[in-house]
Length: 136
Image (cartoon, rainbow, N blue to C red; front, top):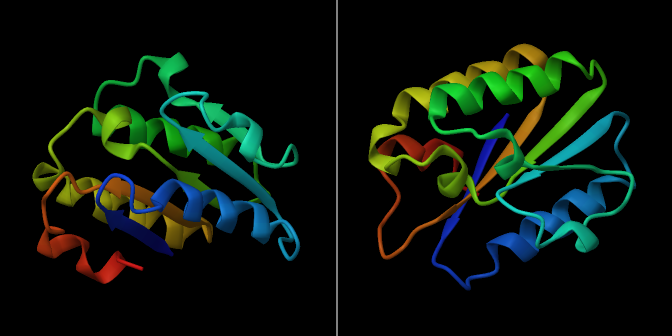
């Protein structure tokens, strides 16, 4: 399942995604991974959740990031949930050009039964139509 948390800067998206990841630990049967665009929230993530600072991997395109998350899943057959914060800073692309990326992530999440939650900073925009099925 693909879920998208979309909103303005300061709307509490990061706080929400961190709280969801930490809360999932109580019921999760598999592993949880949290990917961020920097290390600023490392201490807020429970130590049992694998934290990845995407800035360390020189990711510079949506295709490269998709390969990256597929690699994360490939090395962890027990991956249950993947949280991605700072998404647009990681993929370095315009949101309106990412419809194919979101479809690929949805297909990936279904195929491997992984819940993927992505937070997106709106920066004064409304969500593109292709994101509507994923908004939470």
